[in-house]
Length: 210
Image 1 (cartoon, rainbow, N blue to C red):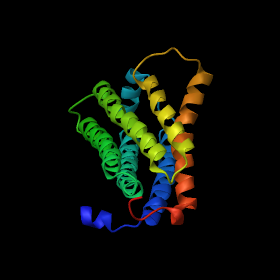
Image 2: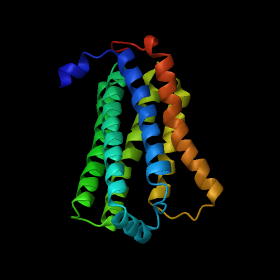
Image 3: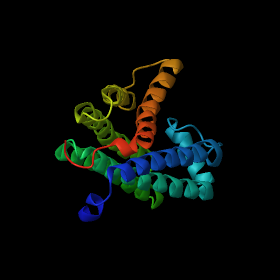
Image 4: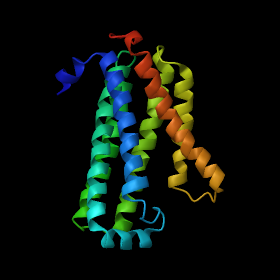
């Protein structure tokens, strides 16, 4: 597997990152805004549990969609390793490992929920644990980009800042709705802007260590 990944050029990996990220955003939007449009907004866990029980088929479709998104997350993690490897292989590997750990935790939580070995409350706890690794992934990704020398440092700063915004998932800060929207937009813009830049500038990325 490692040899296969090592043979992928940084330009191809950059394109994969962009396509995978945009595809995952589309899938999540379809699930949240269309398939699960009548479900209670996650946060009201008790009501959400009732909705899942009453809409088993829709929930099953949503689970498949989320598993596909997590598969795309794995691909993004591996592709980021390829893109960042020329600057620092150790940091690149850490970026990939943290994202894969996040994926593994959420996949295990989803399967446990589907097979009813845990309830929705248990899944929420597992998901929060997974977000810890994702926040760490974003932080290390931002630091790796800042130190890379070939990706604009501004993306690194934005990602590092975005990594700290994930505290809203772990601590009830009693934020207003507008502040929550700003935080969510920061999270989305941080990754999306990097993906777009990588797709546009993919042919200028180094193939060997600099």
